[in-house]
Image (cartoon, rainbow, N blue to C red; front, side, top):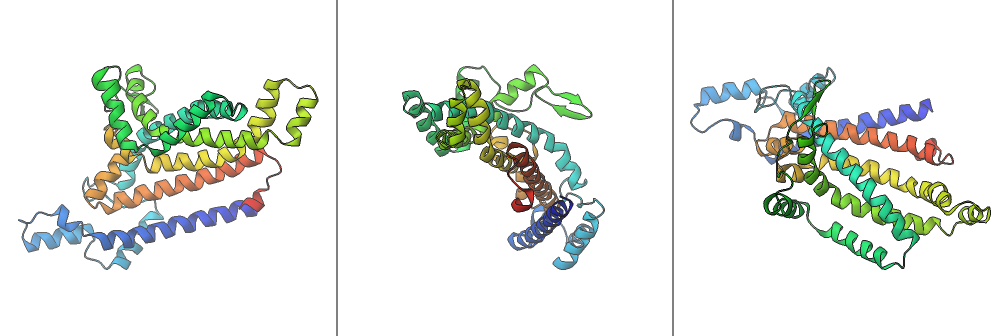
Length: 324
């Protein structure tokens, strides 16, 4: 177990290092932030002073080594635009994105698993066929269009829910949360539903496929032959084994939800890290972009480790050494 964990940590460090290298080279290739940050009316002396102050006068390899040295001490650089530590900006905005991603994941689980279970247990039922057709639509519709339609329907025409912002937040341990207030919860519903639509369709189809695969298995037939109640057979023997592949998908989808929530946050003006990274890309704010990607990669690595642990809990036959 210790050797496996050590290997995973070394792999994680390598992945994070490789990501920073790719991002640094890529950002250097696509543009110069000086052209955006400094106006055309600035004289050459002042321009050179600002460039030196930002450290952009150094060769790329020296800038990268300086970043690595600072990163080892927890310093990911200062934002070019806001002139504050980049990691501070990310951590200020990240709770809003995590709240939105968790809400979307909960909706996907609460809605997708029961509907997928029903579709798998009763595949010939007209409702099951309707659900499978609806899941295809959920895959096909673009997120930004769905978000705009939700705003038009529930905010503009019906006036039931607000269209933008987080609403009233409640501070817990210095972190603001929307779901702890009624107004904040109303602001959370539409963006969470928009972000979860693809996940609901994915979970529904995976659950349905898993149930269809598990039902003919011998252990399910044996459980029925023992006289176990249908509900116990479904919950203990069918659903538990169906959840094994779902754990992997949900873990990775949660990471992708955090990483790519930028569309939903932009449509609903949700002040999360996704909107921050979009603004930083427009301004070529390199430290913020790199800091954001490091946080996202660390989240993905952590989620992969949690998925491995959950695998072992759900199915003791799974060996972590083999999965590494």
